[in-house]
Amino acid sequence: MTPERKLPVVFHALALLVACAMPAWGQTDVNTATEAQLDTILGLGPATTRRILTEREQGPFRNWADLMKRVKGIGPASALKLSAGGLQVNGQPLEPAAQAPTPR
Image 1: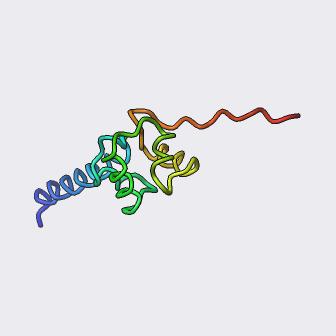
Image 2: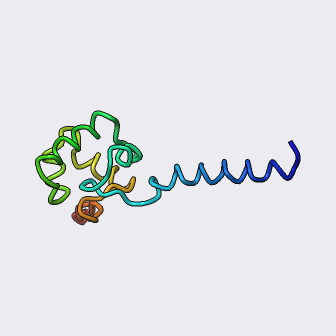
Image 3: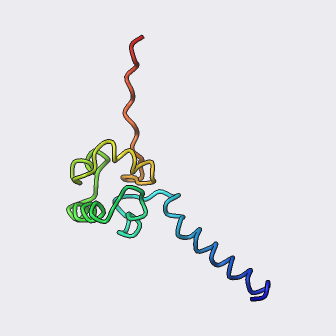
């Protein structure tokens, strides 16, 4: 392959790699995301994604507490990880609970 032909191939491969990684860098709202978009969130496997979509059919999630209450397997610790991975509920990331000051 000539150098002139290699450049477009390399460029297209790089563009495809970036396009595939983009959802992981962005934010994904649990109420509007497709199954494929939810699957890009680190920590969400196919079973949890299906539980989210099934529960979402009953109505949108109001907030993170509602998501954790309705979807088996998503508790406070996993919700924090999912939020750090780009998952949002109604455009909001999960805010970690304020830590109580430690006594001296």
